[in-house]
Image 1 (cartoon, rainbow, N blue to C red):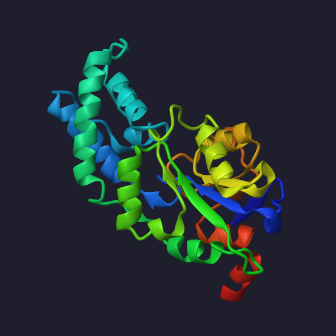
Image 2 (cartoon, rainbow, N blue to C red):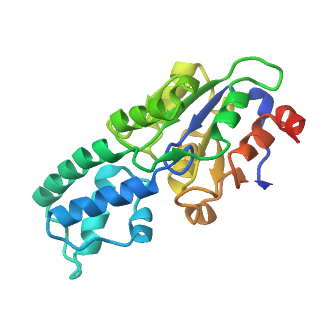
Length: 243
């Protein structure tokens, strides 16, 4: 299902920028397992997967900080030296287990295949901008067959600041020669909507992702319930041919 709050200029959108976790892939189980493995390693109690999943979206360091803060039942601040140790362990563990259960959502490959061109056949540019560290992000895209669709896969440590700061998105726009009105950010959380707003570009929110509740407080221009809906929004002619 598609809900349009502000119609997109489909014929002008030359750059499509995708979030990764909760947008292209379901990585929640591997991230939750890695957080809990870290907590157990340091003698802490594991957290419910639903609790950890709610911490995803602002990068791995913030994910680990939130998990440790949740574990601090007295509400005391997280010790920064301990956070650094836990974060290093988390990264090492996640690098080894990032593909245990992670998969591309159904319909993603088909949608990306269709969206790599305009409705009239002209080529489009597509990239990934995630707050996940860049090396595991690129490795996951390679392993799941997503990498060939994207000109760039940038992560949370590719720039000095993360989303929702617009630096990464503006860099992608400069590299693609795309204006704000020719660019759309596609993601599952308020972080992605805010990134789009901060860069002055269009936004598509994905309710099937990890943080759909944020899309209520920060509504995108268009809201979709599946990757197939991307085609209905961005390449309606191709979508209608499949119906």
